[in-house]
Image (cartoon, rainbow, N blue to C red; front, side, top):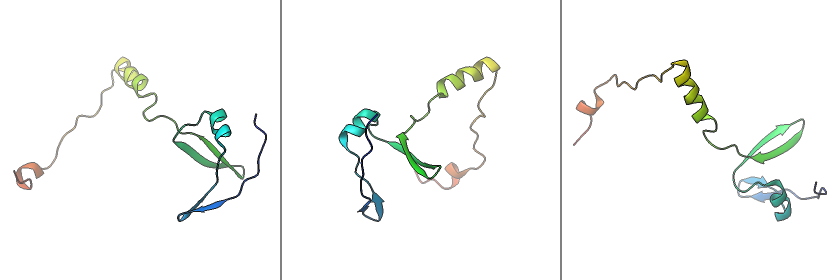
Length: 85
């Protein structure tokens, strides 16, 4: 674990931010997107979870369970009346 450092909150446009030392980022494994939350009066920064994680398994389970997605149905005639070809 890295030793704690002191840093200063700085103005970044209309927001505020902190500089995170490169070595700390390297040790954390955080490369790009992050999730930020407040827990017990602490700001916690974690690597953002990947989009659609677990979707493949969920769809496979739906097939096993015999479930289907709701069919896409259009209930208006916008294409015929409003669209200009």
